[in-house]
Structure formats: C-alpha cells, structure tokens
Amino acid sequence: MTDDTGVGTIRKVGVIGAGQMGNGIAHVCAAAGFEVKLNDISRERIESGLATINGNLARQVASGRITEETRQKALSLITVAPTLADLGDADLVIESAVENEEVKRKILRELCPLLKPEAILATNTSSISITRLAAATDRPERFIGIHFMNPVPVMELVELVRGIATEDSTFETARAFVERLGKTIAVSEDFPAFMVNRILLPMINEAIYTLYEGVGSVEAIDTAMRLGARHPMGPLELADFIGLDTCLSIMQVLYEGLADSKYRPCPLLVKYVEAGWLGRKTQRGFYDYRGEKPVPTR
Ligand SMILES: NC(=O)c1ccc[n+]([C@@H]2O[C@H](COP(=O)([O-])OP(=O)(O)OC[C@H]3O[C@@H](n4cnc5c(N)ncnc54)[C@H](O)[C@@H]3O)[C@@H](O)[C@H]2O)c1
Image (tube, rainbow, N blue to C red; front, side, top):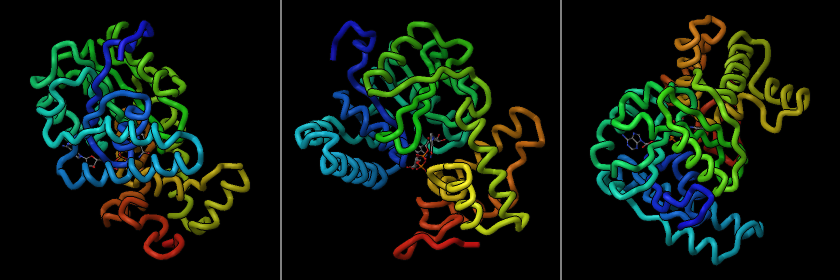
C-alpha cells in the first residue's frame, strides 16, 4: 500500500497475541487492506483468534456494515505466524499479549533482533509505561503506544502515547496508520493507565468495593449504574468483559505508579483472579456465563 498520507511505509503488520484485543486488531488492519501476520504462544490460540475474526467479519456482513467481498479479502490478508521470526518482514508490529510487564519485555527483547531496522514497534498495553517498555527494545525512537478499545472493530477511539524517546516521524506514521483504520485518536501523555483507564478502572474498582462491602448485589450495582448513570453496561458486567486479570493489572499499575492508596485494588478482585474467574473469557467472573443467560455470582 503506497500513498502520500504518511502510512505509505506500512504494508505488513505483525500482531502479537491473538486474544480478544489481538484478534480485533488483526481484524481491523486486514479490513483496511493491510497484510497481517498473527502470532501467539500456540498454533491453537492463533487458530482460535482466526475463528473469532471469521465470525465477527460474518456478523459485519450480515448487518450490512461490510460486503462479502471485503470479508473474503480481509481473511485472505491474514496469515499465521507461529514464531516471532515469522514477523521479521513486518513494517509495524503491534504487541498485544497479556497485561504483564515481564511477559511484554521478554517478547520485545526476543523480537527486536528479528526485525528490520526501520520497522516500527507498538504496544497495545492498557496501562504500562511506554517509556519503560521502549527501554526493553533496541529502537525507543521507533516505539509507541497504540491503545485500542474493546471490542476493536466496534470502538472508535484509539489512544496514541509517546514514550520519552518516540520520534515525531514515528508518531506521524502511527497517526496516519490509525486514521487509515477509520479510528479517532486521543493523544495521551505517558502516565499510568493513560486517560480512559485512569478514569474507568477506578470506577470499576469502586463498584467491586461496593459489592465487597455488601452495599449492593452484582445485579443491583449494575442496574444502578445502567439506569442511574445511563452507562450502556454496568461496571461489573464491564469488568467481566474487559477481563478481571487485565482489570487487576491496570489497578496495580495505577497503585504502584501513582503511589496513592485511592488506587488500591479491591481484595475481592484479587480473589476472583486468584480463583481463575477472569470474566467472560473463562466463562465465570461476577457473572456465570455457562448457562443460557448470565447469572450473578453474588
Ligand atoms: N481487554 C480489554 O478490554 C483491553 C482493552 C485495551 C487494551 N487491552 C490490552 O491488550 C492486551 C491483550 O489483552 P486481551 O484482553 O486481548 O487479553 P487476552 O487474555 O484475551 O489475550 C492475551 C493473549 O496473549 C497471548 N500471550 C501470552 N503470552 C504471550 C507470548 N509470550 N507471546 C505471544 N502471545 C502471548 C495469550 O496466549 C492470549 O491469547 C493487554 O496488554 C491488555 O491490557 C485490553
């Protein structure tokens, strides 16, 4: 893909992590005409990501948002990349593995020697310092935060976050790339959890405290915020949707990064994560999703 909008240098996009965010990122990149290589820790997880993309594209065709031709073309643009070496010819790699700094640093360290020197590296982290992640790479000037929202094909916003060393040319290429995906950009400084999650996650954490202290049941809290504050989803429903492991990681980054007790993760959130009840992705969180319809667990 060549043009004069600044995105001309990007044709091939590598995506690391084929979970709910990674497969959504692969989906929107392919739908916009980029070649995509999808990586995860096992072939099985990549295949499962591809199946989700296929289902979501089919839904978009059914609702008339894209044509069958676009769906076929998008699917043909995505290939599996079982190893990081398979991403070696990418012009842009977007890391979207689990929200764990050690895992992300390890991926970045292993990936860098395999990339073209001019390739741009981005992370979809929800909260971790872009400057610190950039320091684990050999190219902090070509490293940037491109923070998509969940679900990626539906949500309009992308936060763009520069690290201390990010060059203007990297920022401009990333901006043009995100605009090509049809998304709207909000620029954030590199502070813990950026803007959306700095505001959203403390609210979700407070909803979990409200449950923990027995102020209301799961259903009462979600109903209160849906009907009382006009939120499209209740905060506990939303926590299950985001993933409780991701919610806890973001609260830990806020708590440690801003050194303020107001960000202390609720012990009940910790307990759910310790139980492996991570929300929708494990079929159980504040609701149990194993039956016909979600049933509150408290
Ligand atoms: N869930 C959200 O609402 C949301 C929104 C915006 C950004 N994010 C961020 O996106 C990233 C991914 O979150 P998610 O919700 O897709 O999580 P997820 O649990 O659905 O997927 C994570 C994927 O990463 C893979 N993975 C783990 N280690 C890996 C490795 N070493 N190499 C390659 N893949 C590896 C896992 O196998 C899994 O498939 C996180 O950084 C998260 O903070 C999440």
